[in-house]
Length: 218
Length: 218
Image 1 (cartoon, helix red, strand yellow):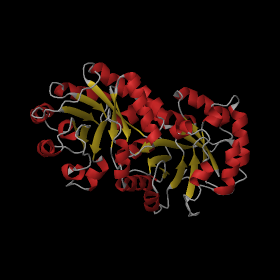
Image 2 (spheres, each protein chain N blue to C red; image 1 turned 60 degrees about the vertical axis):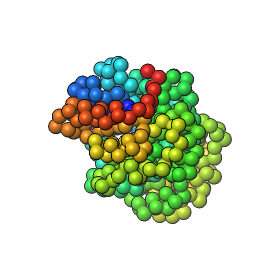
Image 3 (cartoon, rainbow over the protein chains, first blue to last red; image 1 turned 120 degrees about the vertical axis):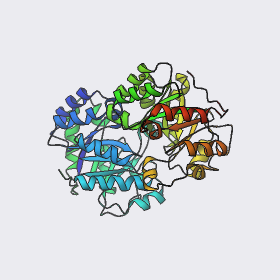
Image 4 (tube, each protein chain N blue to C red; image 1 turned 90 degrees about the horizontal axis):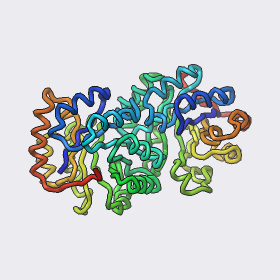
């Protein structure tokens, strides 16, 4: 199991500074959509430069213009790029094609994806399937239980799964028992902690009890 | 009917230079998603500064983190911001709320929205409903006919409608007869023309035969 740190609602320099504090405890670094839309590809470039040995996930949330956006993000230094599961299927095909050609990975963000759409997506065996409770849904429904929401969504355990959305150390313990994902995405539980490195160290402990490994091309 | 120029796959300076050539013929200026993801909010800010009297549409394609993204885009100078119709409904509610508070507009991008989702969206009477054939779908299915695809999608003619996706002068003529939208979004037909101002002038002629007016807060 890999621990992915999601960097959102921060300046690029702040994001780098924060990541330096916790880099020993995390595996993947996600440049959040909010950084990309505020600062553009500079956010991906500077974070990759600061952490050349980390797998960098660019949360592009592509939903159209797939080739252009994926090539742009990979060129900026991303190793994994996200596309929305609710996109037209031609868009997802294009993402898979660019990623394969670049020897990089696609993360399929399943936010608001219907069961029918998910069924169609299961053919993308090389993608990482990210079960995602959105920030807006977290804010609206405080007591969100990611484990129960996503339970049964993905049945094929040969697929690589990631989970995101308000994950805490407590919820991670139960997620490990149910979904046992390949990638656990943690944002504010670390980035907004009083002592980010302490919290990240605790996440690392729980994560490393897991045994499924998600290999990036890097 | 308003003519919206969509600026995509360009440097910010190029986009401004190009818009200057056609500004007499267009009404709204769209900062495309590709500019936002490549250059961040700088693209919206610089284009608004260059055209302070134009309505600026930021094609944010928000699908989560709605308050943050909408506030960011409005602060950068946008007058209209897009959200995906496939988003969770709490996300769209948040966009409507921020736009109302800011006295600005929401454009609902209906890309890949199901009939059931659309039904739920019809309550947003203040939004502009954008029927959208994606770039990726245009590339895959060259002979796309936007008029027939979107025909019957929106039945309530009291709603403000926009159309986007590979629109040419010929297809605009037929769109006027069928949908008669409030906003027509044209990108590469103008931006990639040998003589953008000639083509924009022709679009203006067709557009101004229309009589539905979509007022922005600006």
